[in-house]
Each structure stands twice: as C-alpha cells, then as structure tokens.
Amino acid sequence: MLKLYFAPGACSFVPHVALEVIKAATGADFETTLVKFHKGEHTTPEYLAMNPNGQVPVLLVDGKPLTQIVAICEYLDRNYPQAALLPTDPWARSQALSMLAWMNNSVHPTFTHIFRPEKFAAGDAAMAELKRFNTIQFAQHLERIQGHITHANPYLFGDKISFADIYTVVFWRWGGIAGIDPDTLPGYKAYVDKLALLPAVAAAIERERIVLHMFKKA
Image 1 (cartoon, rainbow, N blue to C red):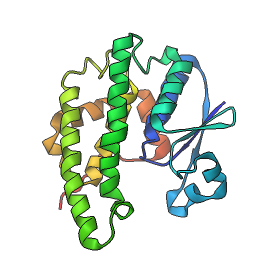
Image 2: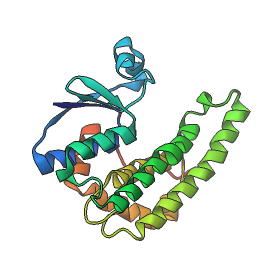
Image 3: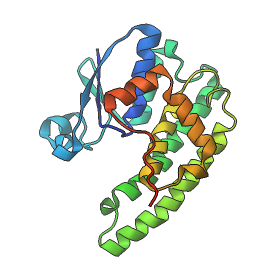
C-alpha cells in the first residue's frame, strides 16, 4: 500500500493527482495523510524521521519513505506504467523529465522566495525586494509554461496527462497567491480549467479542499 503525506495546495498535489490516475488505470489504492504546517506537524520528530527536510510530499512505499517530487514521480511511473504518466518513447520521456526537473528546480524555488522570503533574507526591506524581484521572475516562468501549453495536443506530452501537466495546476494557483493577474495568461487559465474537469484532478482538489483561482484584485 502507498501512503502519501501532503499539504493542501503544495507541490504534493502532483503525486496526489498521479495516484488518482494510477488508481483509475490499475485499481491500485492508496492512503493519504494531511500534514498541517500551521500546527508544525512537519517538524515533529516522527515526521523528520521520514523527511529530515521537513517538507511534503513523502510517499511511504511498504513503510519506507521516499521524498522529492522528481524521485517520487519516477518511482510511480516505473511501477505503474499503465497510467502513462510519462511517455514511453525514450526521447519523449527524457523531454518530459527535463520539463519536470525545470519546474521543480527553477519555477518552484522562485515561488518559495515569494512565499517564504524570510528563509532567504533578513529585514523588511530585503524581503520586500526579494518578493518583488521573484514575482517578476515567476510571472515570466508562467508565460513560458503558457507557451508550452499552446502546443499541447491535447496535453503537454501527447494524449495522456503527465506529471508536468499536474504541476501546471500547482503553479497556476501559486500565481494567484503571488498577485499575478490571470487575465494576462488566458491560455494558461483555459488549460487549468480543462485539467480541473478530469476526474483524477477533481478528486485531489476535493480531498485537499483547495481553490484554484486565488487572485484577488486590489
């Protein structure tokens, strides 16, 4: 049995949706545990024993913890190829992993600098500048993703939803939190709305009790 530790709206949404896709394709069920960051559950000795970084996601595989998005996605694809969460063609698979890695090591950390500037700077002025600068960078990342979306047929890597597609949903939500106007990214918005109708995505949204469109006009 697989068990996923997740936080609502966090990057753990990626394996969360993937597990729903796998369940639909293979019948393999899974369990979930909500990690309440506001209560410090990610800093307990029990949790840190699974993930010393105090982050989500953690995937327990027969009681053994696996961390980091790219590693978890790779494991799920290797063990449940029927779900087709990555292409089978070697070149296409490598391209999908390349995009997934870029999302994880570039787009994701950019938002972390906006959402948690105190981890990277001290003082109100420094943190404000960090947020300002990285909001511009994050908006550029979202524009780049929108460019990829224009070539989706019907998804980023063919006729099946991939890990990268799921990550686009996470970043869309974060863009609203960062104050990026969705009207500047109409193609991206339409794509996320389409993905949200898929049963696997809708199930994860409901379980996490999240709202995708977070932007609020001043």
